Amino acid sequence: MVPQPPPIDFSYLGSFGTKSRPIAVFARGEEIINALEGDVIDGKFIVAEIGLESVSIKFVEFKDASAVRLEVGR
Image (cartoon, rainbow, N blue to C red; front, side, top):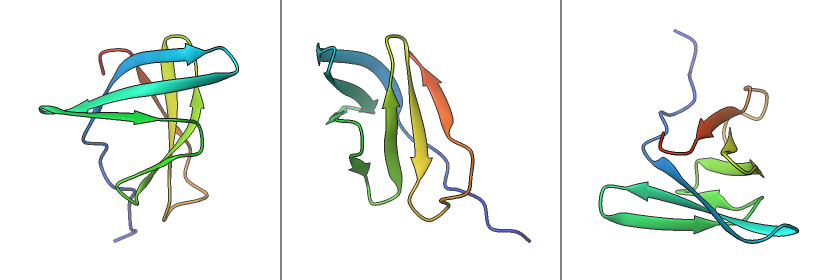
């Protein structure tokens, strides 16, 4: 069996901050996570790009895996 990236266990709520330095906001149950581009969440997920309505997530252990795009509310 080929190893797979871990499942993303949080949802994207949106972003705030300046256009040049947006901050993504994620939720996992009652926990709120704020992250900048390049930040690593849980040692597994890299916030690759923050857009107006979505965010791209890459994987620490799977550098060659395609980024996953999360839309607001997902």
